[in-house]
Length: 259
Ligand SMILES: Nc1ncnc2c1ncn2[C@@H]1O[C@H](COP(=O)(O)OP(=O)(O)OP(=O)(O)O)[C@@H](O)[C@H]1O
Ligand SMILES: [Mg+2]
Picture 1: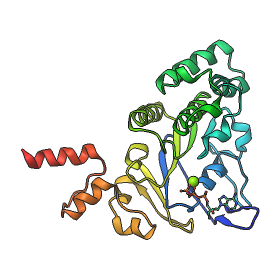
Picture 2 (picture 1 turned 30 degrees about the vertical axis):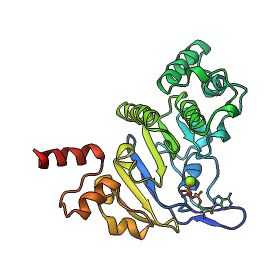
Picture 3 (picture 1 turned 45 degrees about the vertical axis):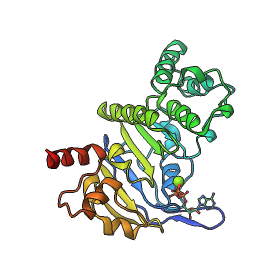
């Protein structure tokens, strides 16, 4: 598919990708590469100028799959428009005619998990940026979608909340949902995805493969204006042959060496 914004800016050109059910895929690329445009196209928020998207092996438009697809937009306040956070979280389930008591239980459990309980009666515009992102994520997950499209799900989230979000996403993935996330932050990718679709600044797909393969190829990443994860770079600079991707992997390697 291809997509240009109304002012003529070409954001996506001849993009072609197949994602299997149950995969966790990261769209990784520098600012302006077209990640958010792709998330909006995949979520049916905008329509491609040419080409099309087939979901779950059918040509059904995203609009008809509201009970199966959910989006966390890069600007979370776009999706928070009710008078309280609770109303926002219960809005999706209500649209899908999920019984009110069931929706309430689901929202309460999610709110507890993402530490939003104390904020449920607040108007969403009064939340901080990180709180809004957590609320918008809870609102996306509240419909229990099969396909979750997440635009920078842990941007501006502090480490403690980040762990909660990462574990929620991992659990949902283990339960079989499909996740497509966008991020320019390579350090986070190993925690979010097993497969990386790497975009360069012009939005071309320059690589598509297992996370460990793409994130250890520093010259490939450099061509896209990115660098390897910090831990990976550290080990590479020190001359290691096998490169860890995460702090936990790096620490395990170091403690072997220090014994
Ligand atoms: N509403 C818009 N009108 C015109 N051009 C736009 C609009 N939104 C984005 N663009 C342009 O489309 C291209 C892709 O933007 P997009 O927001 O998809 O990038 P991104 O990869 O998500 O970047 P970031 O990492 O900064 O979030 C950029 O060149 C951007 O300037
Ligand atoms: Mg973006």
